[in-house]
Amino acid sequence: MKHPPERSLSWGQALVLVAAALPMVAAGGLGAWGTYTNITSVFHRSATALGVVAAGEGATLVLALTLVGLTMLGQSSPAPVRIGLWTLPAVASLTGAVIAPSGTESVVFAFTPMAMCVAAEGMGLLARRIVVYRTGVDAEAQRRNAEVMQKLAYHRARAANHPDEDARQDSERESWKLAKKVGTGDALLGARLVDVQRERMTIGANDALAGMFALPVTAPATGVTAAPEPRAVEAAGEEGVTPPVTDEDTQVTGELETVPPQGVTPVTAPVTPPVTLDEIAAVSGVDAPAIGEPLSDAQLVVVLRHLRYSDDPPLSYRQAVAAFREVGFVGGEQRVRKAWGSLMSHEESDLN
View 1: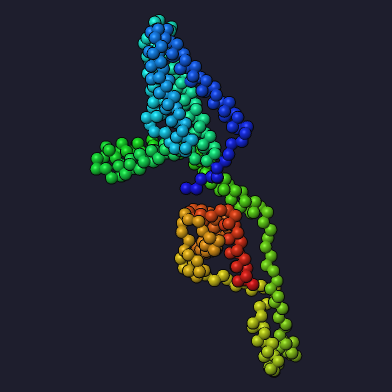
View 2: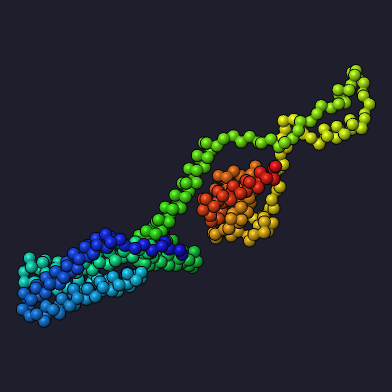
């Protein structure tokens, strides 16, 4: 899968991110200091307070740094790291609530360790957004989508082939639940879907404008000279008398048989192309176009020629492009339009 090119942070963006990160670090440090003070006020021993802080805020800090490091490397975080960021502060909070001497202090002791949890999550989220901005890759979203797609594939196979009817029905319902989660939080997927819809809207708007502003096409003169009047008629002196036929008259009559009447432009019907796309590609000397793969300019012309003459009368540009997209061929709007112009130029050359 092709990813967008990397972008670098400007000085202004870097300064703002550093300014946003400093309060998070300060909040985590203040939370650890508050927990240390709370434990000291109860046990009056620094060693015990340091042990509680190390087990709660210290371990949370280690997990936070691990999360930030993995995120900056473009990797997703393992489940134990994400669970530990909330479990360890929760244990420290419960410890503070239990050892608090009164109900009011119990609330304060319980909330103090949560500062480190929020600071760790904030730093991890900030690092993740920086990586997504610079590389366009959200490893965490890709991990979630991979898990969802793996479960969806399992339940679809189970719904189709499991021998137990109840199991098939359960997997069928679970598949629909999982389908709602596909692509959730994946900004890159959303951007690509927007690009696809934008291209379709551009094609529709361009076809509408082309239909509104298109001028009637007048067939150019082909240089055909009007046929002279038959001299045999001019030479008829009296009604019912047939003049003698001379060599000159015979020559004029031959010309009349080959030259079309004045004002009628001869039209040469395009040669009917081969029936299959592979035959057209073989005649054109190119490889057979494959659905879903990038096509060369020559292959685009082959595909459009095949689609245009797949019906009678031949398809218009709009109809051919719609069929092109519906079948699943790949090609940008500009390249498809250029290939169509080349196809039309060849047709006009054949007519002339």
